[in-house]
Image 1 (spheres, rainbow, N blue to C red):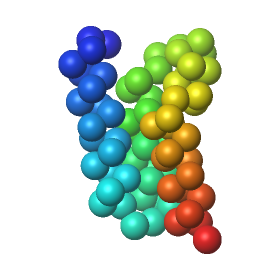
Image 2: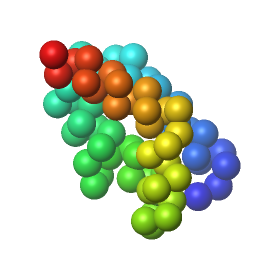
Image 3: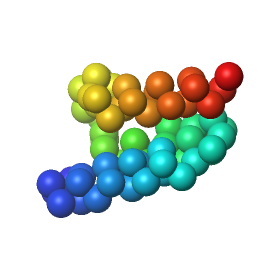
Length: 68
């Protein structure tokens, strides 16, 4: 994935975080096999790196906040 496309996916993730009001919505739109995060990591090594990024951690935190 090119840098510009990567930035666009990250921008869309941030938009979803700002708009989404349910944990299910975040999970469905970001964490599923068809979700936005799947576009950022195409293999196991990339996924390991991605889950340590501030954006992923922020998304997990927001997901947990909405669960409760």
